[in-house]
Amino acid sequence: MPAASVLPFWREPERTPAARLAPRLAALADRTLSTFCPGERVYAEEDRADCVYEVMGGVVRTLHFGRDGRRTVYGFFVPGEIFGFENRAVRRCSAEAVSDVIVARYGRARLEGIALVDRAVATQLWSWLAGSSEQVTARIDLLARGNALEKTAHFLLEIARRTASGDRMNLPMSRYDIADYLGLSSETVSRTFTALRRRGVIATEGRSVSVLKPSALRQLDTAFD
Amino acid sequence: MPAASVLPFWREPERTPAARLAPRLAALADRTLSTFCPGERVYAEEDRADCVYEVMGGVVRTLHFGRDGRRTVYGFFVPGEIFGFENRAVRRCSAEAVSDVIVARYGRARLEGIALVDRAVATQLWSWLAGSSEQVTARIDLLARGNALEKTAHFLLEIARRTASGDRMNLPMSRYDIADYLGLSSETVSRTFTALRRRGVIATEGRSVSVLKPSALRQLDTAFD
DNA sequence: CGTTAGGTTGACTGAAGTCAATCGGTGTGG
DNA sequence: CCACACCGATTGACTTCAGTCAACCTAACG
Image (tube, rainbow over all chains, first blue to last red; front, side):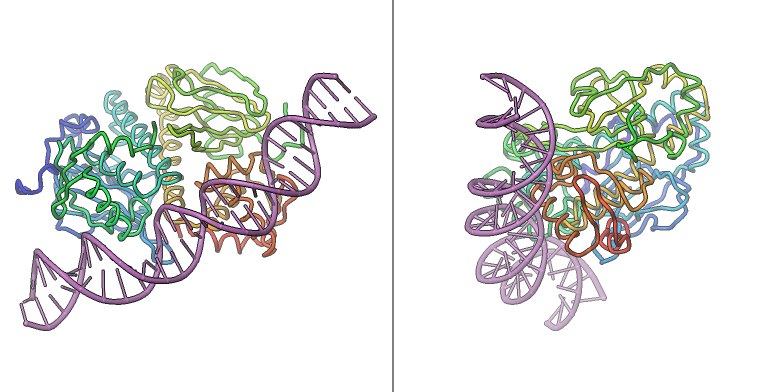
């Protein structure tokens, strides 16, 4: 069980919409809990995609290395969120623990079987899948059109929203992680944080970020206005 | 019925994977056919998202205008593909006809009702939805990391694949459309086409493109290698 | 201690955006 | 029928934002 220091990356699943699924599934499906240390691999590319995970504590990243060695971070997953859902026999991305992590694993075949029989579970999964494609829409908007400031502002607001944290939040991921998520270089991420700090929009202390002017951040976040 | 001149943007739905859904749905659900002229709106943002469309002929684009007036094209849809599926009461994007278009409209409530009862339809919809999120993954990779050449090469290969066209294909969308889809300016798209033409990779004649060196294009397409 | 990994900052470079001009096709109204 | 306007495509000149390369600093860790 993670210590209090990693808050707000530990929450009861019930507190996020996606996780309303969890109690239902826990009752219906077998699930296995596992823990991972920072940097440890949850699954690798080409692994059999035979299960789905729910984050119980900590943060997970999914990523992919391109032919030329460049890294793309597809997503960060915080407690209550589901990852590892794929429509193929083998995985396209790998998943790694960013911080100390606890995940619940659900068998895919079992889950799909339940979804076909249990309308409530099916509706929930539907809703979650469609919702995640909606989030992806904002990401595309951002990557296609946003500059470094807009991308960073959106990232901070997104993390704040998904972790339901207040002014202060912990970013367990490195600048490299954020850069590969936003399509920037780590130096640019660093410079952008500095710029926001100088403007008095945020205050940083290591990987802890305080949002001093949420409205300024929201004004910068032009994805889906 | 579109004339032969719009080939290959008219095909029987059965020829694409996504459209294996169609015969089943046609038998089960009511559907309405409609036609649209180039530039005509199929639906607008904030419209009620109460139906789903299948392209029968022509090309459709979904798009969104940002606060600052910038336009993002989220997707192009060719015959056999489904668009307009959203997990909300109102639409986040609008949809417009790129060329002369024929679409089939399915009522959303009816469709979802069928999906909950008919396992085959549910499985197909699941598969389609997960598959489209997979395609989105390649797009994110491209937008986050690709340069103009890589983006354009990927775009050409993607269109060729989805329309199952041979060496020669028709691009009914404008340079502006392609630019807003790839996160580039229309001038850069134009310059990139010129660069590919000069290298002898493609030949263009208006909006008709011939791929002379498919292998060169594939080598440039670094998304998901 | 020394080593390493991550973060920050600076100097320089380069790819793509912006602004502008040109050209061809299309449609429209006089 | 022609003059005009307009849109899209192309190309050139210039600018700018972010990437690259490099240095330095700190913290963590063996």
